[in-house]
Each structure stands twice: as structure tokens, then as C-alpha cells.
Image (cartoon, rainbow, N blue to C red; front, side, top):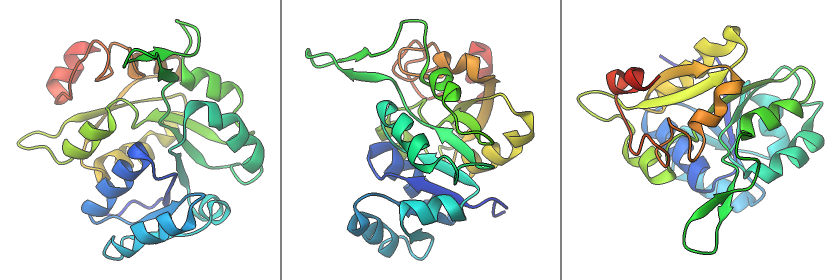
Length: 216
């Protein structure tokens, strides 16, 4: 069943492209936008009619659910540039606050006990609603584990506003995963890189719903 909410993916890096591709592969419509208009146009042209490319501003105005597939440090400018347009929107934060450590790995760029979700919530435009989701798996696994059989793999999410849970769960299902809420935004640290429910943390892999529930 088609979601009643219009979804826009802004940014077609590894995570953004994986999310948009998963929606398209499951025959669900998605709006795509990026600073490189040719990139968005090319993606839409290869989507079989399920993706529509547009400008970032138009994507925000048109969609109900905005997925800014941008790095953590870019959220402040994104909110400042689009604050008025984001009022009343559901914003899905996929970010992980990490950077290369110079030794082939990654390091956290905020405090050990801080989370991107909580920091982005603190600067959230007035009237917008935030969900933490889609960043709990690496981009490769996000792409390869969609529609896993015989049981779908889980995508964890965190949200404070219970009224939007059905909407975000529907979008997660439309990308080929089973949604599971871990709690409010204050639990975001668990589903960000190095967290106990992240593929690149203690969890170590994509899991099905029973495995996931046993970790909560």
C-alpha cells in the first residue's frame, strides 16, 4: 500500500542513494533532490517512473517526510537555510557524528555520551518533528539487506512524537525492512555508529525482529 505521505530524499551519497533505491525497488514513489541537478535527474531517469527529481527547495515544499542524507555537520546550515519551509515536516536524521581517524577507521567527533540525534533536536526548526532512522546500518548493508528473506531485517528508529510513528514505520517498511522503535530521541546514541544497536557497534550485523527485540 502506498504511503499517504510524500517522501523526499535530499542528497544522493551512499546512504541517500541506498534509501531512494530501496523505495524505487519496492515500487514506491520518492522525490530526489541534490545540489547536483544532473545527478538527481539521472537517478529519476533510471527509476522506472518511481522517482521524481526536483530542486531542494521544491522537494521540501512538496514532501511530508524529508530525509536529508547529509553529513552531521551540515544539519545546522540545512536547518538555517530551510527553517520556514521545514515547519510541519517530519525530518529523518540519518547522520552519524564520525570522521576518518587517519588510521583507516573512524572516530566520533562529538562527546562520547552525546548523540547526533539529540544535538540536531536542539536546533530543530520550530514546528518540525525529528526521527532518527536509516543510519543504523552501513550503506552497503542498507542496500543489500532490503527485502531479506525469509524474515526481513530490522531498521531501528527513535522518536519523541508518538503521532508520527505510523508514518515513519510505513516508510521503513516501504524500503524493505521491519521497523522497531528503541525509544525517544534520547536513545539515539544506541543506534548511531559505535552504539549497541548499530551494525558498526556492538550489534555487528543486520538482525531480524526476534534478534532485535532480544537486544532492547
